[in-house]
Length: 157
Image 1 (spheres, rainbow, N blue to C red):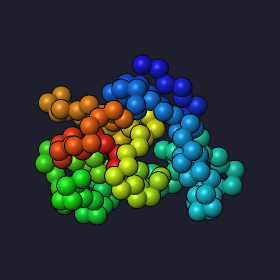
Image 2: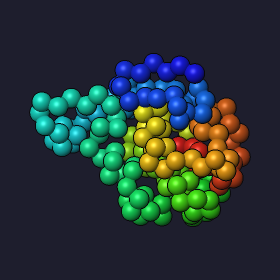
Image 3: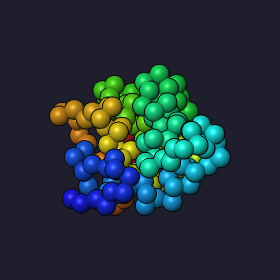
C-alpha cells in the first residue's frame, strides 16, 4: 500500500486498506481547519501547521481518555442507541476518537461517512492500539451500511 504523504506524519503501518490512505494535505477540510482564525490565535505567529495532528485541539479532543469518555455520551449508533463500551477500553476510545476527529473536522455528519487522513489514523491507533484478538477491518468506503456496534467502532461518523 502506498500513500502520498506531504505532512510528514502519515504511515501505512497501522492502516488497513486503501480507503484510509489519504494525507491531510489532500483533504480540503483538514487544510481549512489548520488555517481558521481560531487556530491562528492558538499558535505562534511564526508557526505553520504542516499536519492536522499538530492542530492545537487534536491532542485534547482526540487522544485524551477523559475527554473521550465525556464525549462518548453525545454519540448514538446507527440504531439510535446510546454509544457505550462493548469491547476493550482501547477499542471504545479509538472509536470515540474517530468520531470526535470527524466532528472537529466536518461538524455533525449524520449518516455520512468520511475517511480520516492517514496521519490521524496513525496517531489514534498508536494511542489506542488494536489488540491481536480484535476483529478490525478499518474504514472501508465500500462497506455495507447495515453495521452492528462492533463494526461501527472502525468508522468515522
